[in-house]
Length: 283
Picture 1 (cartoon, rainbow, N blue to C red):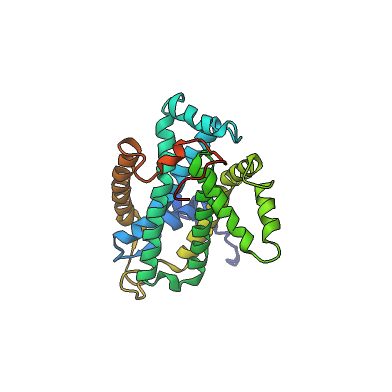
Picture 2 (picture 1 turned 45 degrees about the vertical axis):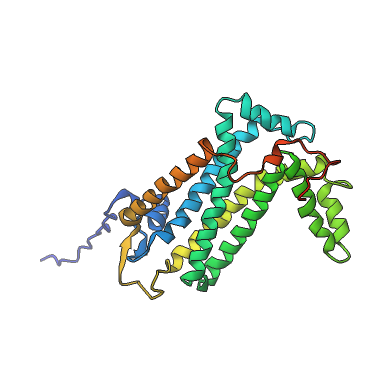
């Protein structure tokens, strides 16, 4: 009589479920944007965060295309912008998208910050920390971009803002000369600003991922300011639909600025080439 001592090698069952939950790389995106648990009572003010993501993508793509035709030289920068507007196919639209996209960026970021202050989202200090740094990076990026057309307001705006460094005790004057690359705002300044303007968005993308990582680690705040772990819904389809509606509203106003009134948020003095010998009256 043979004893029943046979050992059975039972293979553990393979993970069963949708591909988005089993693929290691896709699972990260799925848990962050698709099946992400969200409070059930988020309102329209929470859509401005995703609109900022849309703004960043628009600015990255339009800026990359503009850089193909732009020339960072004090003798050619202004004419290269005119060339983009007049000679490049759909160049006028591309430039208007980039210029007004920065304005839309700030409209959305101010709404996003106001929501965070009003509803107490700033209490999540880590998320707020990275958000504040994103805001500072956005301000720096906008200032650098404003100087690139090398019009009157670009030149004198760069002169006024950079001169703020001179108030720093002891090292202020040296820092100012280093930023300028000379004794005044000049060709070296323009080249440095263009290089930084091209590189900073990639730093911003990295900080955005950190901002979202820490946000999703703890979860979003909600209008009531209470713990809502027990009453959550998946991000898709509930909030993807809301964000899509926000994108449509955003697009209507954005395309009005681009196609109908592109100078509504601009300054007409920037259509004059930079002239170091003539300061605009209000400056």
